View 1: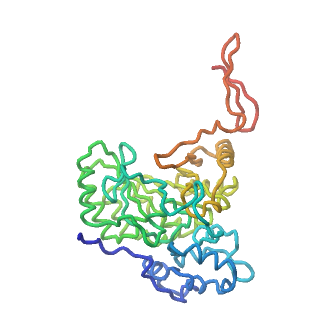
View 2: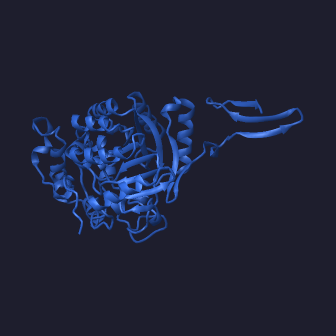
View 3: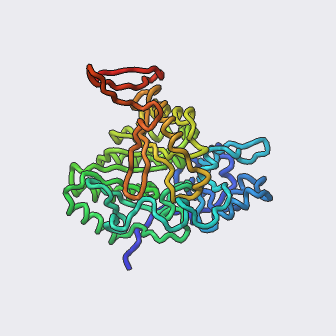
Length: 399
């Protein structure tokens, strides 16, 4: 049996510490490993923060949803959850709803609902090694970890990350060697994407080794890394990590973010450090019902990112075979209306591309599905395009 790679900070082995309730007096607060060691990973840990949940129906719903799934929430993230006058989490708090499964228990398989079996993204023929997915012609995704700093309870990779008894392979030395051989023997590959789970759950030492192996294959290989760390544990962006990314010429870092409340001073400080090492910093955002499916929320999120040098890149529609399918499912029509309004009112760089992700890839949804979409008509003196401008005024343009 091949040797497992060590030094992943695994949430299931973490311990609780009541001092996490008062971050200002804890010297370990800004240590990313302290955050992981003191993460909430059980119902009892959750009650340390919110003892008022103890006898309520909400706790039973959470307990049922966590029967076969993992929970991990860093103290940093817990500190962002807004409380009501009774000290309980506000029911509509966007952080709380993303990391704690508060919805009614999902009962049995439903069309396009999470069933613990259906894949959202990984088709068997695409997994050229247990950790390497070749979906698109010129790039591969490397699944470096099955664990995360904290768990989004709507994760589209739930079979890999949320399931307590996941069948997905975790990174092993022989699989890493096979993956390197595959990239080396396919010169048509322009890019490798380090993903997971969360690749930054690995130590700086191991990330240095992974990046060194990849950079040795080709000097012009594009290396991209995706992370949720800035929302859940921004202290993971250490000075040493930044030096490693710069040394191995990582081209781009993609940040996963769902709501403006996640963009704290610590988030922005980590982003500045990343930007000092990597030429491109961008954000991918899930489109989630009850979280960011309002114009004001999404526009604020995108403008805040843009204002701080992070380009809003993809707005991913909620993927069907994911937990919380009823709680988070959002309207495509609403998304089109919101993005269309943003397109007319915000700088283009601040407007993400709206996509429907599915098993075979991503479909960019054209905004002309909106009402008043452009139409081309023929007249005796030529063809004219009819449309409405950003102010909603009717316009005619000669073709």
